Image (tube, rainbow, N blue to C red; front, side, top):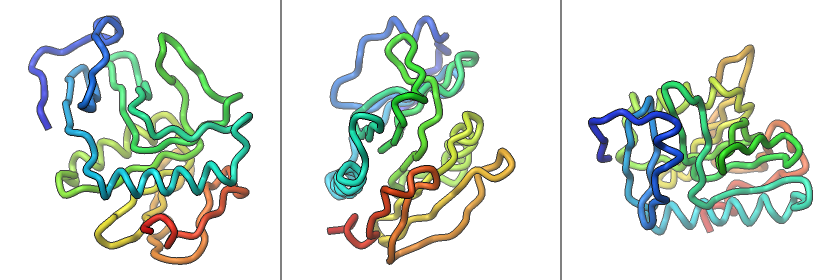
Length: 182
């Protein structure tokens, strides 16, 4: 992951051109450039998105897998790009073309480049905005670690490799875990 040395402000981030073919996150004012997901990870994300979309009403709930910015804070600016996020439309706060509110579900696909330190920081960011449900997908192990917000802290409530799973706040979106890896 490449990182800039000059820190940017929220206003400078807004003035930046959109990146094409790469993923850019801003973490504490530093721009982090990452390559696009490899096909197996992208496939797992799209399978999960299809499964969730089939069970949710598009008029009220949005499932995003596209490269979009989720603003964690403006100062120092931190803007994440989750692999997948599910939002209830009425709860979405959109300012300056970016989402500034917690999704009901955040999904990240783990890759060999994820360090413990980077993952801890990522989870702290999602925790800070009150994301109630975070799923960490391990494509190699074919598992999902579920973290849920308990007393303001994201806590692991288990790792699953089979059966049904649903977002905490959207139980109607229960899916079979095995279908993600097809």
